[in-house]
Image (tube, rainbow, N blue to C red; front, side, top):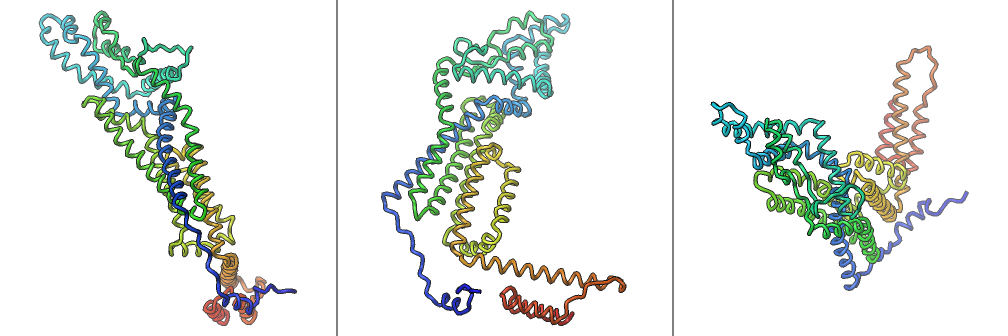
Amino acid sequence: MTVPPTSSNGSQTAAAAAPVAPEPKPGRLSRGRWIGIWSLIVLASVIGLITILTVWVDRQLLDNNQFRKSTTRLVQDQQIRGALSVYLVNQLYDNVDVAGELQKQLPKQVKPLAGPVAAGLRQPAVDAVSFLLSQPRVQQAFVNATGIAHQKLVNVLENKTGYGISTGNGVVTVDLSALVKELGTDLGLPASALDKIPAGTGVITVMKSNQLNAAQQGVRAIRAMSAWLIVLVLVLYGLAIYLARGHRRSTLRNIGWAFVFVGLVVLVVHRVTGNYAVNALTQPTYRPAANHIWLIESSILADTGKAVVFYGLVMVLGGILAGPHRFAVSFRRGLAPTLAARRGMSWGILAGAYLLLVLWGPTHALRTLWGVLLLGALIAVGFEALRRQTLAENPDAAERGAERAEKMRALGARAEHALGSRAAAHRPHHTPTARPPSPAEEIGHLRDLHESGALTDEEYAQAKQLALGS
């Protein structure tokens, strides 16, 4: 039988004594190429920021199913219910002389009390409306009504016809006048007084005619850009990595930092824009509720920013673990035997950890198909690149993995033998048992393992003492 030269001690010694030529370092990129790579990264990051905003508008503000979910959260929020109750009661009292109507119905001797009674009924009316809005049946009716209104608004913005749309001379509104009249009826006001309520009472203007054309153009642009901009961003990042041949690891790390920066910008914009809009567009009385509305209606934007930061940190971590730092090299060398000898197990552990992350779903992106696929692809590509680099740097990884596996099998066999001997000692003497190996046989087996390198000198000495003691 022919023995490979690498298995002989002489060949190993010669190979160890031979000088190993250092791997050639990648050449430095030219100034122009570095500028081009960074230009692609910056351009992709700016477009990525725009993409996140367009996807948020498309997924949360224009999607009717998501709008209904958000509306459910809105009407279940106590702060928002309280503000809506105050608004409805204010609309009633501002447009109906509640005190005068009560005075007409009260007996003559108590008519002077109509004003205090009307004022005293104001807070109970607010509490009654708030209680009414807390009932599941009313909440579902509110969600259905606003959902229909939202779908009509989206149809208007998309310039669709034939859906029963009425914009009121170019003005898109939300009509709560029926709730105002219902509240007046509950307070005991006569129908004649409620019929005098102005037509615009309880009507919230969403969009005016001079804003409609611009909004329609904006919606068409968002619909067109939300999908293609994502592809463009990925292409630009991929082109930057392709051009950075020899420096792709550092380029990938830089792209990861760009992800982190974009995600943080999104989170800052989310916070600053929300505070500015709430303070500029609402009265002090309604600002706490308006802040809650903004947080609910912009939840996907905040989740997307957090997800982008997380993706960026994953890329940065991958770039660091693949880098030349001492701890990274040590980490790869320790991982090499497992990657070489247990490839299936390595992928299985990675897949199991990723499945747990998806089931957890800490961000909105991990609750959508595109987010799950994107992160899965990034992790899979990064892990495979790290595996190949680790095996290339550690050519003896397979041999060390086999030795480690053999050592684990030997230790397992010893433990199994010890347990078997202990069980045999407790068996009845009349029970036939297999003859245990003699000390000489066990020492011979241990000697073979020691000579093959599966056992170190210290382990061999300890196992030999155990065999002689048995």
